[in-house]
Amino acid sequence: MPRPAPPADDAAGALLRRYDAGEPIGVSPVAEGLLNHGYRVLTTAGTYFLKCYIDGTTAAPAAIAAQHRATAALHALGLPTAPPVAARDGRTVAAFAGRRYALFPWIEGGHRAGHELSQDQCAELGTLLGLVHLALARVHPPVLQPLVQPTADPVQTEELIEELLALAAAHRPHDDLDELARQRLLERRGLLAAYGHRRPRPEAAPPTGWVHGDFHPLNLLYRGPDPVAILDWDRLGLKPRAEEAVRGATLFFHHPLTGALDLVRVRRFSQAYRAAGAATAEEMAAAVHRVWWERLNDFWMLQWRYQRGDHRADPLFPAAAAQIVWWCEEYEQVLDAYTN
Figure (tube, rainbow, N blue to C red):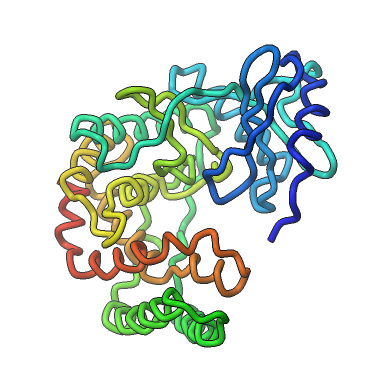
């Protein structure tokens, strides 16, 4: 677990003196999100969002600066991002007590689950992601396409299953989630035996490009019917672009208990994403296959629980584990929804 950030009031007071943002009146934590810490800061000049970067994979100064430049560039192109506020010295990253912080304008709005979106709004969401991908390509240098994109190795997955089974059995206090984990791990072992021959070829990935990296409902703010801000660019990076569209749709348009995808909404989203010019049907097909394989081999929620002792992702596991079983059964229907 990362070490805790300094008390929010102390950080806010020290940091705000570096900005033309008034004096702090109140500081309250923003509860949502698994990575990093955030605070709503009310000042004499207005309301702000103070972000503390604690995730070691995304808190490097160069990575944060790249995120800030990208959001500013996309904002200048008219896309709904919230660039950070510059301090008096022109910097957008400030250090305090061994942590890095950034100050953002507070954007009023709320999160919306996929089932709350009309079909037209699902299409608008697909268009938005397509435009973001195209804009990221405009504001970054051309990407040299890799010869291969690695895929999960089922041999390594089998070793991980063995380890997680042992950790689940030994977990105390033993609870229903431990038993569900055991059942799903054994089930996944059977699925990998059945589908292991369908491992994607590493040279068959769709084109790589700059992506948001974590496009899901908690990273999108709506005000009324319209998106007003894409948040949390911590995972900005180079990935097969169409895979973000496939993955994003699974996160927006799944049943919260069964994990089953709403294929009507997925279809509208994907059609609009492709119509924006961000991917072809063939590229989406390759992305569907790779994301399916990734999910078949992925146990990050259980790894957090058992290897890191971090239980924040526990509530996500039941639906995620059920979804891949459903996806294996409905593979052709899912593929059709993304490509036609």
